[in-house]
Image 1 (cartoon, rainbow, N blue to C red):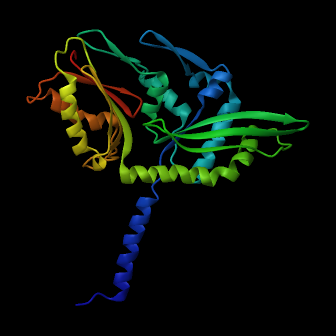
Image 2 (cartoon, rainbow, N blue to C red; image 1 turned 90 degrees about the horizontal axis):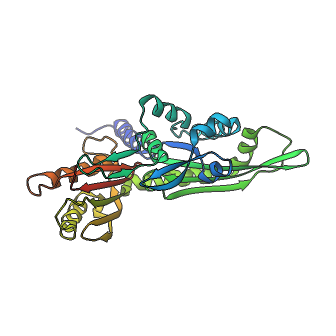
Length: 312
């Protein structure tokens, strides 16, 4: 019995619609003020990274003390929402961190007391779980009664921190004194190209995996040889990564680093996967009966994992 042309057409339409819906899936974004903007305006704090004083942006104080920043971010969020991009709101993420007391910055080995530090900014990005961070820098210009805004938008992959999209321009002078209006007027003419770059990067991740980094650290109490173990880790990466794509950048007897690791976006159950979840199987393999190597996982942001061998 042959199917009618109408039924065939309906089936074809449903298949095409399903494929289109999959392709139309968009990355989750979060807009933050850039480090350059925060440092220039005095919104920063120092972070003790294992004895090294490091300057990091203080988003919380910037949002609390600079209402113009809050309005500008809200306007940019609105422009992205109009283009159907899902958003994580920076202010909401910060409040969630405070409520859960999630700013626990240092993870310490129970046996040795050594530590791997994570910056407050990394902690915020990890909590937000946005696919792409949009860093915003802007300057207000005045010429007589007219004002304009110079802006720079940088789309950063939240796992690798690589820049995947950019837009920079100065808007036309305007009699408007409202920053959000000036920003909208300046941004709109470059918005389509910017959002297309964001979408193209996300589609690349669907096809080729998300880029993450793994480093292997060893405690002083571990007596093994990482030179040899690195070959086993490479075999695991070759099997688990998308099309076996990764790069070994450094291997010594006590340290190894693998980057450009293309991790699947989803696990076998179809759930979104973070780098910590991806490398959990490697951690279990090394601690299992075949190797019996004690280890622990420490994370920096979403895309960098340290597997620490030895004291746990």
